[in-house]
Every structure is written in C-alpha cells, then in structure tokens.
Image (cartoon, rainbow, N blue to C red; front, side, top):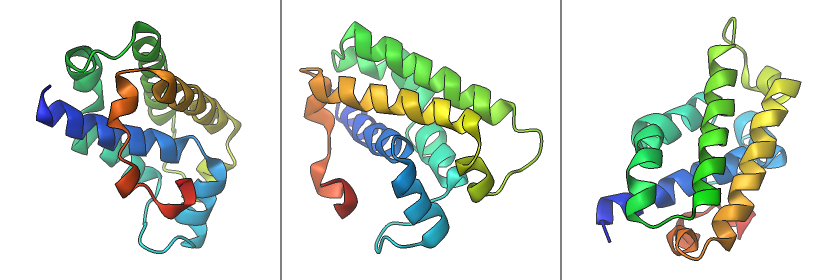
Length: 138
C-alpha cells in the first residue's frame, strides 16, 4: 500500500462526505454550529482538489489502492458534476446561494451515491478515517 495514497483517500472521503449532506453544510458553512469544524464551498473545493489532488487520485491512487470499478466510475461522475458546477458559476455566489441552488443538489446527490459505494467497496472502506470525522457523522 502506498501511504500517501491512503492519506489522500481519507481526505477525499471526508470532503465528499461533507458534500453529501446539505444539513451539515448549512450548519458548518452558514451557522458555524459545529465546534472544531470550519468550512465553506471554497474550503471544500480547496480540500478536494488542492490538498488531496482529487483528479490525479482518480487516475492513479484509486487503482493503487484497488478501488472497485463502480466506485471509480462514480467518483469520476462526481468530479464531473462538481467541476461543471464550479465552471458554470457565472459570478461568485455566497455559500447560502450555493446551498439554495438546484444545480448544487446534483453534486450533493452524486456525493451521496459515492459515499454509499465507498462504504460498500471492500478496499475503499479501509480508507474511512473515523477518528477525524466531525462528531456529526459518527
């Protein structure tokens, strides 16, 4: 196992988990109601693509870690929806505007699919870092 790939997988899972739950997004992005956890749409983008190299992960690390093909395919779909949404932002929207946007719902829905597949995938499920998840998800 590649240690760096494992660390990236855990970070990506956490970011997609955040993306999969609009109630959590409201609590964290808008209300600041989750102690020890601070985020926003911009932070989510940064965590996923800058900190965890999500695009590279899909074409390299996911294979090294033996993720299943169905999960990888759905991760690629998620990336497509996320990047498409980000690309189509005509002007900078506030977090509340993003959360109310029906197009964002498509990204959230695909994130839910990915989370379920990740939990069911025999290899990928090894890279869920339960210790670092916000209490909200435990």
